[in-house]
Structure formats: C-alpha cells, structure tokens
Image (cartoon, rainbow, N blue to C red; front, side, top):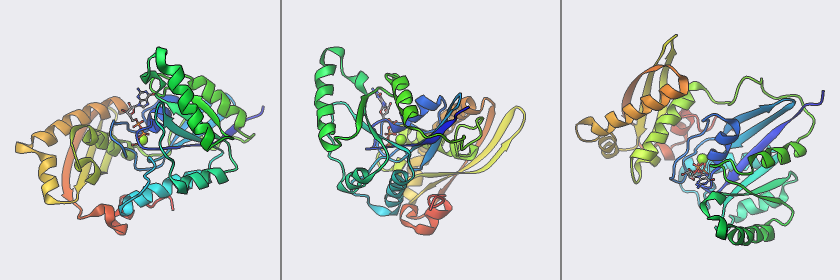
Length: 300
Ligand SMILES: Nc1nc2c(ncn2[C@@H]2O[C@H](COP(=O)(O)OP(=O)(O)OP(=O)(O)O)[C@@H](O)[C@H]2O)c(=O)[nH]1
Ligand SMILES: [Mg+2]
C-alpha cells in the first residue's frame, strides 16, 4: 500500500499560534503556549499519524525581526533551518494584522521550491458579522506578498478548518515510508517536557524580564510505577532575579512548584515529587558555552 510521509514546518511571527496549532493537530501538549511573545525557544517535532500517512510537524520560535543577543540569533537559526528541510511550509499570520515580513525571510521564502500555505489564524476572534470583510482584507494583503501560495483561514484554538488543512497537506506529500515509529509523538525527551511545563508557568506567573532570563534543566527524572521523582535547576542571570523568582518568604517559588506539579502530574498521569534548585548562570543568554550546555546548539 502507498505510504505518504513528510516534514511540515510551521513558521511565523511570535504569538500567531504556531504552538497552539501543532498541539491541536498532534493531540498532545508537545509545545508550551502563553499569551507572551517568544514563548517557544526550540524546534519541536510533533508527529501526526493516520493510516498510510505520517506528517512530522515542526514548531519553531517566532520570527524576531532584529534579534539581539546570542540566544535570539540561535532561535532565528532554527527558523532558517526549518526553511531548508521542509516539504511544506506553513506560515502563520493573524486575522486583521498586516505584519511586514522581515526581508531576510521574505527572500528566503520566495526562493523556496516547496509549497507554502499561509494560514490566517484566530478567525474566531472576529464576530461572524465582520469576519468576511476583515478576512478578505487580510487575504488580499498576503496574496500580494506571496501570489503563488495557498491561503487558508483557520482557528488553531477552535480547530476550525483543521481537517481541510490536513487534507491539503496530504495532497502535497510524496510517497515515502514513515520516518518515525508510529507510537511516538515527538522528538523531545520527557525531561524536556518537564522543563518546558515549568517554563510555561514562569511565563504565566512572572512579569517583565523574568520569563526571558530563566532557563530550566531537568537534572533528574526517575520514573517508578506510581510516581516520578524530579529535580530541576532553575537558572537566572543575576542575584536580583533569583530574589524575584523565589519571592517573599519563598511564596512565589512555592506557587510555581504547586502549579508545576499539577501540570506535570496530568502530563505523565503519575504522582510527582518535584524539587527545585535555583541557580545563577551569569548572562547565560549571551554565552556560547552556556547555551551549548543548555542544549541550544544541539541541532547544528
Ligand atoms: N482566539 C484565538 N487565540 C489563539 C488562537 N491560536 C492561538 N491563540 C492564542 O494566541 C496566544 C499565542 O499562542 P501560541 O501558540 O503560544 O503562539 P506562538 O506562535 O507559538 O508564539 P511564540 O512561541 O511566542 O512564537 C495564546 O494566548 C493562544 O491561546 C486562535 O485560533 N484563536
Ligand atoms: Mg510557540
């Protein structure tokens, strides 16, 4: 029987719903989602299987027009890399928004020989009465930029037009046996998911620079029959940030731990014992070796 399989890479500006889309399609929470930009820092595979079909979706960090610092530059290298190895590119945009596209990526996209589907996401945000007009306007804008590409309005959150999108992608895939075993849904480890769940909570609970200067490493992940024993190091860049993270009488860290345990528990369906260890890694976002140790250069 014919088998079709391929790599579908999702790119787009921060906050346009890339991670929401990949989670919704794969049906597992593989990528964290928050209302803040630059939530996703890595390239994360989410694997979708159907009879005779395997689609390897790749979530990427949101495009930053002017990356500053080494970490943002590395994040943009993931985006560039995902333009190179795609069979199909999905570009997420938002209804009613006319973001100018960074020239660097625009050129790169126009050079692509692979099909690009422009997704106009969050259509649920506009009431039915006005949707058609706003949509028409947004479609026209993107059509002028990429006349050759298909444009599809969707809502990643409400799964609107998701089947249509999957069917469209299937028609664009080549005959190829599955790249991955059909029982796995991501390329990332359990330790990675634990770190990301905690990072998601940090994005949700803390303000200003704290989400951006924090990195999590799961040092120990010991899985037993009924429970998982986890030790995580939380790194910040300066002593003052450590104080904010811990909070008065340790209240903030306690809250972070409580809600992280809840989320990790529902992810692994086991009891969780979680220990935090807050550390300082001076200016880690700007240090090649530290970023390497945190796994940011694993793909190059
Ligand atoms: N109303 C609505 N909100 C959405 C939709 N898709 C995503 N969102 C919201 O948009 C915000 C950003 O979603 P993410 O999936 O984290 O966006 P992202 O593109 O992965 O963001 P970065 O990782 O920062 O680049 C979250 O608050 C989502 O709940 C949608 O279809 N409709
Ligand atoms: Mg994301």
